[in-house]
Image (cartoon, rainbow, N blue to C red):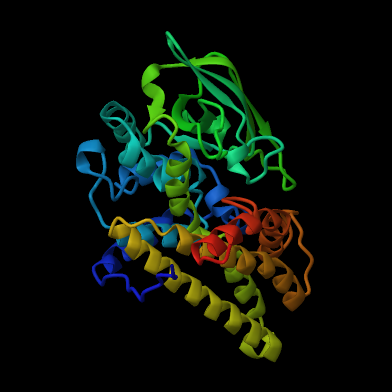
Length: 386
């Protein structure tokens, strides 16, 4: 195998959408402070998500019969790029639009698609992802939560953790073990649409270092869900999850999570005129912008693969790994170039407040969506190196 990063350009027709999105965000985020913009795709604002839905910007590429709008992957890319660059609070609808919806479109039953997807595109329901578990890290093959077939449907037992936005979501796409692993630990795993208000399910938000209760622990204690909750084939969960993660790892969120800080850094360096920034600052900013442009080109190339219906698992892993490195370096560099410490005090400069949030959160960027070690293992196997 080899990497498929064929050059691709966003079609000229997407420019009108870009201008429309920019005008919308300029109005909606007019008074949004820097530290809130810095949360970007972890930021939650139900009213904002519903306004995005009303614009027809949820499920943009999905079939119209399921509430979608049958627009191109390139148009969706432009929308997401503008949202992240502006620091819009997209966290509530993020998982459903990025991966739960596409997963259901690919593997879900007709009933699941007809019932759930139109409600999501109208901003009525939201999804979270139940993969990680305590003591397993990124090793999804070691999933221990069980789904047992019973007369009433399926009974769930176990625990999921680091489940982003579970306390605000209506449904989880969860990975459970439906039979013991055989020779391969990847066997016996299945995915389910889990209604999170079902009896036997408890959700506990986990407050992170920055004080945000974004992550959650979700406990299943003999929770009963309908028989029609199975997504795809029983036992095919591993293959389905791998296809799903291609959506998660290749998008612009993998290199734009810190973009609001980059904007504030450039603004701060230019406070007293370009000359005051110094030669080193200009060189470092140039390097970062060049890397950003390269990552963006790679990501657009993957968007072209997705638009053709291909599965860019290998390329997505490369973008996620390189994007995390890019983002994790930026907070330290920003503090070094400006010489101001991070500070969350409302009286602090916008640069300091954005920096305070990302200094605390950037270490997690190489964990979400798969650790660096997991990604490099995928890349090595894809290239035949292991």
